[in-house]
Image (tube, rainbow, N blue to C red):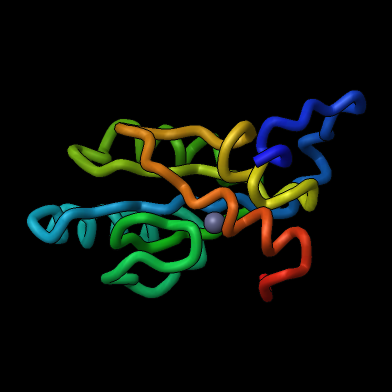
Length: 132
Ligand code: ZN
């Protein structure tokens, strides 16, 4: 778990972040709202919508879908998600190239309740033990 807690002596420049992700977690009863939020986000912003993942996948502990987007979209999209997420829990994280575990923990933000991300799984990807 060391990667997630690493401190950087050199700041990470936000200008070097190519992409961000929002992972929208949903319970079965929340699927309708999750669909609405997905469609509205796709209509209002330039986002790449990932598949519906009905079961836990990778480091993610619950059913979710992903939205990928450029840094210029971060502010407006996070504000939209903040105002319209309803009961959904959402992980927003950068893709910095400085370690997936850190990107999903110390450099991430949550809308709603933080979920338990499988950081050892991400450490294994960063160490080359799993395909990223
Ligand atoms: Zn992601």
